[in-house]
Length: 363
Image (cartoon, rainbow, N blue to C red; front, side, top):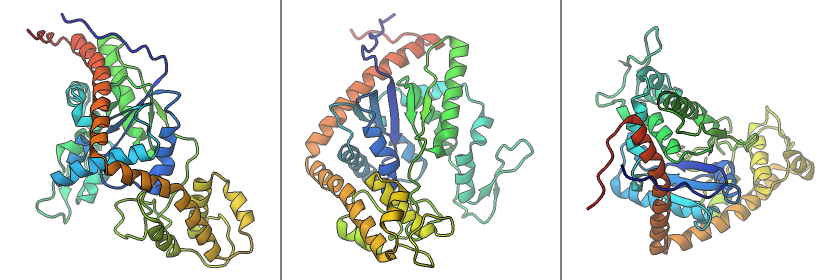
């Protein structure tokens, strides 16, 4: 039997989080995720993955996927993910994600996957709905195009996500509230494997910030700001130049009345105050006091200045990085090597425990 690599000497907890390379990130992504991830670099052994395999659950344009992957890396670095203090890698560059997903899938009843909220929501958007007394999905067509299908990747997505996490034996996983159910499945699979084969995986804890900015659409503040919004004026992107930010915030929906107050009946004004507070680090109440007696034009001007002050350095750094493709590819190479070393330790242990015959040593 081949010997296992030695364990890392780094005493810090292991933190892993990942994002799909699906285009430009939003202000909400930056404030709610990227900025917080950058703060973890000194307190944890950090791995940040670009999960390109997950994008294949939807139809992709190959050239765009490759371009988005490199762009995602540049956005990570421009947002504070220093490659000297963390490992930045692409999921498909590391052997072990799909291999571990298969092993974990063999421990996962299909009913657990069919009951996943995100899977059912995505299926419904394609024109299908769930039926059956046991809540498992028996799809009935309801006006969907004839070619509409729910591919098995959508169903299996949470198992691959679990493998992404457990392959690095992560202690903490920064995730949004919408991924909590998937992380709970990951925790259950870790416990299930440990029970069947002996202690192998850490049971990862969700690292969900107690309080994050609720960044809403500029055109419909009842909805979350989204990079997939069809209205180009609704979303502030990480790479928007100052003039575009000014136009978008200038056209943002406000409310009746003139008071600048954070209230349920003033969703437009409340959204701008949330953005202003999150980008400046000041509480909403502070900005309510400062802007008391002033009009919505002043609120929008102040918010624009605050957003530009935060995003413009990120955009400029991003442009510098994208002009140096060689540097980005070197970051991916070293990040993949570091990720592979840790993945090899875990995967070799898993293979041994489930009884797979050891791989022959090279001659």
